[in-house]
Image 1 (cartoon, rainbow, N blue to C red):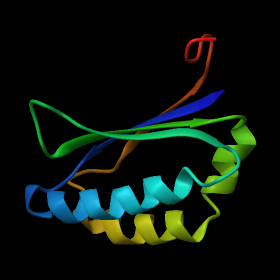
Image 2 (image 1 turned 90 degrees about the vertical axis):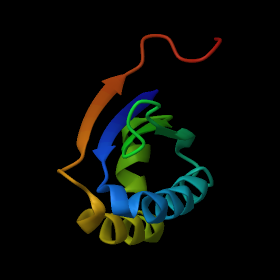
Image 3 (image 1 turned 45 degrees about the vertical axis):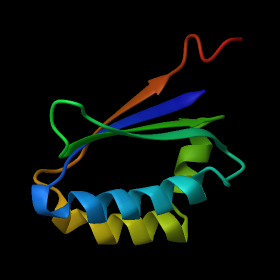
Length: 99
């Protein structure tokens, strides 16, 4: 598995709009053949901080995701809502799930 974890700090006045746009992106991403998981997490101690946890069957699945219309729509919508640039960390899984 190829996993991307993205931390995003959202301007407080845009949290609800960010959640709506991000759920649209997540739900469409789950339909992609290369995607295994897409979780949208909101920090308990800071409701303006989010973690997107994305798992793909291979690195190519992530590249294909970035070429989709729903990703482009999300990226354009949320860029001005961010308090700072998003921070992505890419990982190769050592152990994934229950297998």
